[in-house]
Image (cartoon, rainbow, N blue to C red; front, side, top):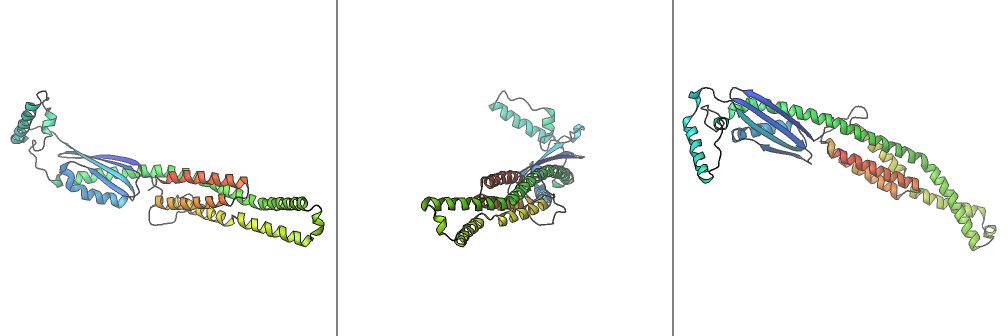
Length: 305
């Protein structure tokens, strides 16, 4: 399945101590790049989160934000007065330097570490973090799947346009060769007549036919793009398999985005060769149109995992 690298997921899990919120933001990146923004209380759980993400996400820059919202105590006896006095002493020192400092609100004081007399360790929030992270990851992956479907449809649409151009060039090539044969014959006749009036009377028909055939053969070899067109057909078949638009997708290891990037490089190379061998304006235009479509597909592939 084609999956985008750009998505977002968020979830919250409640416990007796409060709630944990997890946000996941993913953007494009050549490799898997994880960044964590977590409070100190959850730092010990970073390894578990990293393992969870690496099992599911192959590429992308993923930012993990975690926050804790502690349940406010309703029992006055659960307040740690020593911690509260420590917060008050700190406030007085700050106010001595900045007299206009506004006193903290009750909710801020209760959120001060240690004020609520509840013992915490990494296990206090572990289960909630795991639940919230799993739900946020599921949301992010679902969004990546939906965006991936949209990207695959856009690429498939341009692949159809490429196939149509390739078919048109294939159909046009025999006519281009014949047109050149006729043009070559006219030029040769005009040149001989200009240099030696009546010169055709002194040239044997076999010799003239031989010369025309030789020149036409050389031209045919120079503009023969059958190999390039055949490879473009092969690349298109591989492309449809990778994006799941050409029947059952073949199971392959590795990143689909990286495979697509390499495939578009190869297709662009064939389009360049087609343009260099162009025997007519129509083929030149076809090569330019191919390069434009391939570049549009390559830009979309930059978003694919």
